[in-house]
Image 1 (cartoon, helix red, strand yellow):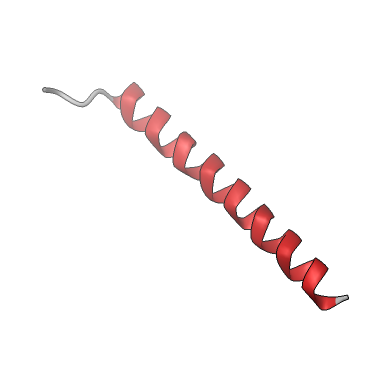
Image 2: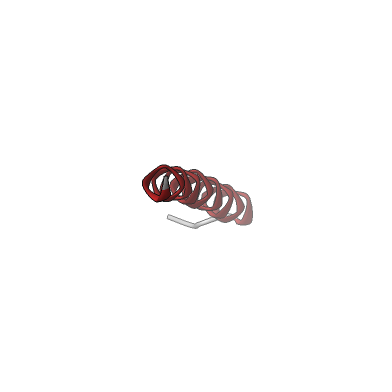
Length: 35
């Protein structure tokens, strides 16, 4: 199976979005824990 550039780009974008939401959750937990 050949991996096309579009597939790679989609995977990269997906993982970036995932890590962004993951970081957002961590920031929420940290900010609520500080109070």
